[in-house]
Image 1 (cartoon, rainbow, N blue to C red):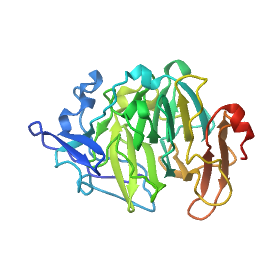
Image 2 (cartoon, rainbow, N blue to C red):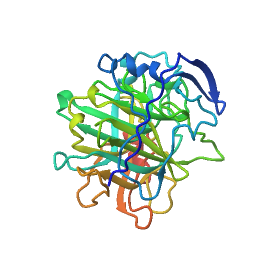
Image 3 (cartoon, one colour):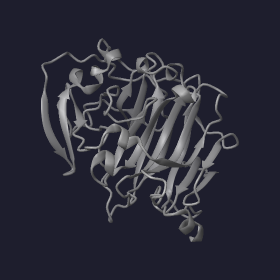
Image 4 (cartoon, one colour):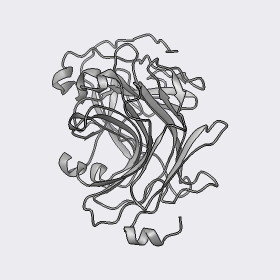
Length: 347
């Protein structure tokens, strides 16, 4: 059952632009919500701003207003935009050989309106020209015009200019990170794409809730997280910038991916950098794996129907029913390295 929320239209104000630093790491700019990069997209010049989503109800959480979470964020009427230090061209950021450890719904079986999971967030050691990520995906369309949205965490030195783990999204047919291409509409005044997770030796793992949902009325695709039992809508991709995702998704995926700039380079670590095992949750993991069906109901993944992809001996993948609050879960990842070295390592 969809949770219907009031649509709030912000009063257009004069451009507000300032720069701030969050957690001593993130530099971001507070810009007028109507002057953010998304609206330079040719299809969004007359777009009507949506400030609250109509998406499936989470039985374990309630919605937060965008101004509740702004202790270190931006003033009302403005939104944070990450001041990305990357100097690499978009083509260089996207280039590379990719490896996967994922589970996914069967393609073409039904229409999906989103996916969600609880994920472990880690900080694997990644070299220049490499990346390591964990995402929830929604996609639709043929290979020649594949519409794709991925959201989760990433360590990506070429994209960010550092080795912090950051909230990251990747979308559209050509592959565009965060706001490097106009399209994503930022709504929350505190959480933003590119924001760093504070992971260190004292806190080597964090827990994150990630959801990507299609709005029941507008058809826009929303990115949401959850903090302290509050669902926080970060922002959305308007329906009109897609071709096939306007109709919903035909596949929902969950898992890890890595990339190297050249095939002969070592594979980077994935997840926590450990092969998955049965005991504990110190490995890359997703739990409470769910999807939104065509009726906009949030449903636990069907263990018997999910497809698995694991294409490198440097990583492992376990998918199982954990029971209790974890429900459908997966563990994934590994230390990376060369294939010859990986074959000699104990799983």
